[in-house]
Length: 80
Image (cartoon, rainbow, N blue to C red; front, side, top):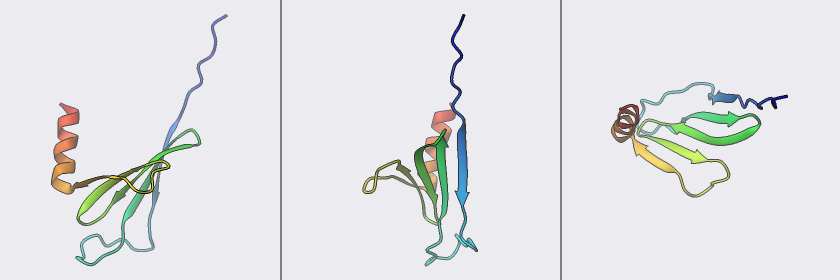
């Protein structure tokens, strides 16, 4: 009898402050998006006015930081 495969569901949760205004130059608001598979946190995507950051789970010092133009180019390359 074949074994049943365990299916991992990916869950994305957006953590929104009361008001998000990413257009102001001195805005400290960010849109934080947590990405999980099952109960395990894969990482957090932080979106702000000037950049996008990917913080892998358990990593407090090193993040992948891209400005919006480079982030868009990276996504376009990955889709090709």
